[in-house]
Amino acid sequence: MEKENKALFIIFGGSGDLARRKLYPSLFRLYLNGVLKKDFAVIGTSRREWPDEYYENIVMDSIKEVNGATDENTQSFVKHFFYQSNDVNDVEHFHILKQRASKIAQKFNVNGPWIYYLAMAPTLFGTIAKNLARSDFLDSNHPNRLVIEKPFGHDFDSAKELNDEIKQAFSEDDIYRIDHYLGKEIVQNIVPLRFANPILKEVWNNKFISNIQITLTEEVGVEQRAGYYENSGALRDMVQNHISQIITLLTMEEPLSLNPKDFVNNKYQVLASINNFSKEELKNNFVRGQYRAGNGFLGYREEEGVSDDSKIETFAAGKFVIQNNILNGVPIYFRTGKRLKQKQSRVDVVFKSKKDGIYSEAQSDVLSILIDPVSGYRLKYNGKSIGDNRNLDQFSGERILKDAEHHQMPEAYQRLVHDVLNGDKTNFVQWQELSASWKLIDQIIGFWNEAPLSDEFFYEAGSMGPKSANELVARDQNYWVYQG
Ligand SMILES: NC(=O)c1ccc[n+]([C@@H]2O[C@H](COP(=O)([O-])OP(=O)(O)OC[C@H]3O[C@@H](n4cnc5c(N)ncnc54)[C@H](OP(=O)(O)O)[C@@H]3O)[C@@H](O)[C@H]2O)c1
Image (cartoon, rainbow, N blue to C red):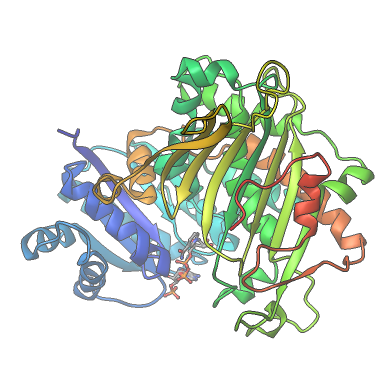
């Protein structure tokens, strides 16, 4: 039986898309499994004027499809929800919000943290933090936790500016920066896989691993997000956060403990070890691309809201080489992009093939960690070809999660909200990591801004991206395991 948590949630952007699609269903799942029971309340805020009953209906609507929802449990759940109109630029509104929050917290016997979830534009994060402090929210006798979403900054300078603003109100220990990849089942299993299995632990080093490949591809184009994407691109949208985080989990040294401080410190060491890139490395180790029309799809420049001469990359690939005691010198390749052949999130760990001894023809063993849309693990290994011969063949053993197991898996946001309730920061991004990853991204973008677009910049929509991404790995005598 789960421990009951007592908390007050104040959701800024309570009428928005993220709150409706992710937060309310996650809170409801936590309610269904007893993590939240009686002593909790949620106040949704945004500028529009909504009566409480209207808000209850909005919440009800967003949870009705959740597995296990009944008339009875949805009704009792939404009785914990309240709405307060609030313009975050107006400190007076925060005073009113504070009074209401105190009353609601008392009514629900909330003897636990107050959790401020900023489900709105990051440009307003600093203002909200400042106004929370000014209106005495943070002086109270309860823990205060701030939860924020990506994008956290546009580059290192803007991320630092934003961080400095927030830090005036909240200490690093109380800031929970969400990267929803860190809430995914398979991503959370990378560390146990590496360190709980002597077989893998012993070979997870540069003596045995040839290279590691991270692929996060999307089939969809820019959809309705051109306004955001035109100022972002694949590197900022996917590499600065999700891919950097996955790299840290794959390559960090074993932490002293699973305590968040030890854990996150080792992750940070990975990013800090990827030193300044030389001009040569920036030129050779990173590839950008943009989809052009093909396979019945529009090109990026033809999409609504995109400028005709946009140079924004909808595809990025690259090679990082980290320096630490275990994986020094091992290339870590990544690629990500939109309008590619298939949606696929996976990691392929390619082991060195054994060229000496009696089986010099043996191929590389490959461990694939499959994140989405299929979740599981696959090991390719060599063995004797079946039959009256002595030939070698490559076989594949796999454990793919079944539908029933998928249903048991908590949704990423559900896990992360649960962690916030527990005050567990293991799966959140610390400022050190964030600043280190921005410094890397800034170098690449700075170089791209100066460099002319290559002839291979445009790739056909529905393909696997620019050919130069294949050349990137071929130059090291490697190849992408996942071919689409
Ligand atoms: N949607 C997703 O799936 C998703 C995924 C990952 C990250 N995120 C991040 O999550 C955040 C929210 O995204 P979203 O898609 O939910 O945005 P959204 O649908 O545009 O919602 C924005 C919310 O902010 C409120 N708001 C805007 N200005 C305000 C102000 N001055 N004072 C008070 N409230 C104000 C809006 O309501 P009013 O207009 O009534 O004020 C609305 O509730 C963004 O940082 C986004 O990057 C979203």
